[in-house]
Amino acid sequence: MIRSTDRILTTHTGSLPRPDGLRELLIAREEGKPVDEAAFQAAVADGVREVVERQLRTGIDLVNDGELSKFSYSMYAKERLTGLQGVGGLRRQSRDVEEFPSFAQRSQPRWRVTTCDGPVTVKNTEPLMTDLRNFARALDGKTPVGTFLTAASPGVIASFIHNRYYPTHEAYVRALGAAMKPEYEAIIAAGFDLQIDCPDLASARNNTYRDDTEEEWRRKQALAVDVLNEITADIPPERMRMHLCWGNFEGPHHRDVPLADVLPVALRARPHAISFEGANPRHEHEWIVFKEIKLPDDKVIIPGVIDSTTNFIEHPELVAQRIERYAGLVGRERVIAGVDCGFATSATANTVDAEIAWAKLGALVEGAAIASARLWKT
Image 1 (cartoon, rainbow, N blue to C red):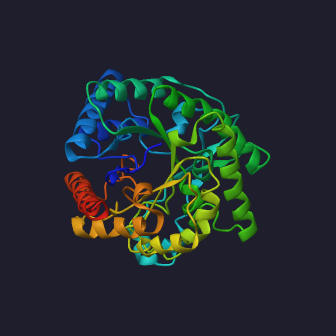
Image 2: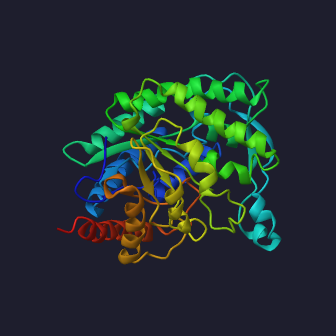
Image 3: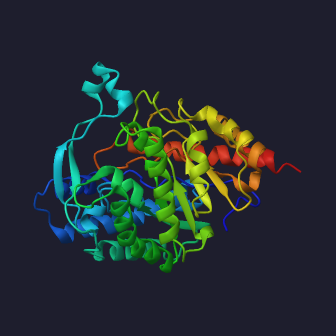
């Protein structure tokens, strides 16, 4: 069980800036253009080595592979599972964005919806095995405090890839769970901790499930957690962390559901650590939620203390203050300093300049050191 026993540990949410050449190859593959497979695989392996080394040079304690091989943190499932190759109409924009038409015209692109058009089963395990090998080789001879790899939850896949095959939403989510279970277990078996990305528990209310009644939305939240708990029953909770968010884009976000409405269902999930947004202007104030909602003794939190959608580099003192707020409510040992969301949740998402993203991670490390000096002051 990873805790901040003698200082505040640092980590991030998963995706990190991709090298330009690799980014171009990922976009070409996604668009169905011919790509030299050997060149792609070499670019991924080289990128993973560099991203691991840079995390360690920056001072990040809990490191990963930067999700460099994936076009998107959730849509990569199309490559690994059957039944997810259908195409639907144009995706609706988020409810908050639609309320500002002039902003909507220049912000979120309206891409076509991917749909489930057949039975969902494991199709191709080689991309996962390659990810595991690349990360293991990049770590050779290195001793980070901890390691993790990310994987999409059944709930978030269902929220992005719309069901056009299964008779019910529940049947679809359960099929996705059965298909993703081997990936989760393979990550654990390889010796890495597992981060399960569950943005659907918060963000989907503002987009995919925006027209649901409150009761329907609650049922979908509960189902996502129930299925997650069932398919991870054989994985120790302390080997898992989960990530919540409200959509990693710079937008109004005034329709985001409050953390207080999401946290109770998230706390029912088995993962030991919960990562969530805590730095951006819409959610920074929600540290106070932990005054009312008691964190269970077997849980730790990874609040975002760095915003992932702005090129402002946070002052380390601000980072320290954010950390200390949470530590004052849940205890210093149960806070790990993190980032609101990924810096490159897809190959086309590059709101934050790559070098600025690394500078922001440096500020995270500096701020954690400042907070540690005060929290462990003798």
